[in-house]
Length: 427
Image 1 (cartoon, rainbow, N blue to C red):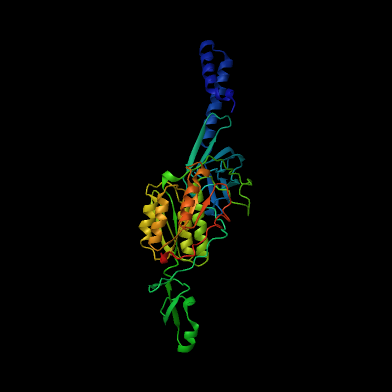
Image 2 (image 1 turned 90 degrees about the horizontal axis):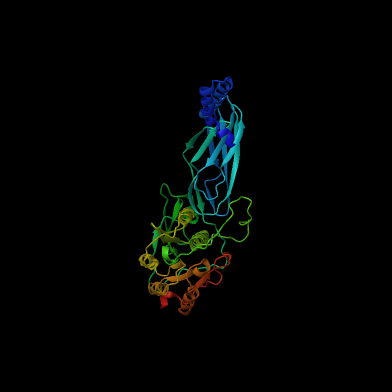
C-alpha cells in the first residue's frame, strides 16, 4: 500500500487541528472524509474473514524424496458480501513449501482453489500446517488474521534406489548345529504338517496331505536360522559430515528426473538412510529375513522379520533417521550381534574413519557373523580423511567393503562388494 494512504490517521489529526484553529468549512469536510474512511476501513477489515473457511488436503500422505508433493487449498466465502483480498500463508515446516498465495475478489458465496506443488528434498515427518489467513481493507489501514491448526502430517521416505550387484547371501549351516525356530510366517522351510485349526490361512493348506487323509492339513514353517540379514546404520553425531548445498524445491526442477540418477543431499546422514532403506527393500522383496538397528537420539532396533510389514517399519524408521546420537557404533553393533544366529550377514553403514571399525569387523568374525562394510567417504562430504586407508585395512583382512563417494550414482555402487568365499564359521 502507498505511504500516503497509511498517513490517513495523521491527516485526520491535522484536519482536526485546522478546524479547531481556523474554523474553516474545508477542515470540517476533511474531518468527515478522513473519519469516514477510517471507520469504514476498520469495519471492512474486522469482518474480512467472517464466513471464510479454508480446506487443505493432499493427494497422498506418504511420499519419498525426489517426488512432487501436491496439496490443494480451497477458500470458501460463505458470506453474501465479497472479499476483496485474502492472503493464505502456509506455515508448515515442509522445506520449500509453496502453499502461500494472495487471492483477490472472491465473490459472495463463492470459492477459490489452487494447487501447491513442491519437490520433496528432505526426509522426515512434516505437519501440513498451521495455515494463517489474513485480510483487511482496501487501503491497508487495518488487517485481521486467523490461524488454523494443522491436522494432517506428511511422511517423506528416503529415496529408493534399485541396487545392482548386491551379493546373494546364502544361509550357512554349521556342522552339528541345526537349531530351528518355529514361526507363524510362511518361509521356504516347511517343518511338518498338522490338522487345520480355526484361523489358519488357506495359503498354508498342504493339498497332497488333504488328498491322502481326507481332511484339512496345514504346513508348519520354521525360520532359516542362519540367513538373517542385519543392517546397522551409524548415527553417531561426531562421525558424520555434510557439505553446503542448495536444492531446488520447484516442481519443475530437473534435479530429480524420472529414471535418472538419484542426486541426494550431500550429507553422510542422507546417504546412510537411503542405502539402509534400499538394502532392506532389496532383501525383503527377495524373501529374506531382515533386521535394522540405529542409535540416534533414540535407540531403534527392529527384530529380523520377513514381508511387507517389516518393509514398512524399516522405511519409516529410516525416514526418521538422524545422526544425532552419542552411543558409539561399535557398542551398538556388538551389543546386538551377540544375540544374532551364527552365520548372519551384517551390513555396517558408516562414515567413520576410526581404527575401531577394523576391530569391530574382527569381533563380528569371531562371533561367527559375516560382516560387509559400506564406508561413506567422509572426505568427499567435507569431513575427515581416512576412508580409503580404512578400506585397505579391511581388504587386507579379507573383509568385503566398498567406499561410497558423494555425488556418485548409488545404483551400481555395491557392485564391488563381494562375499568372502571362506565361511566365517570356519575361522
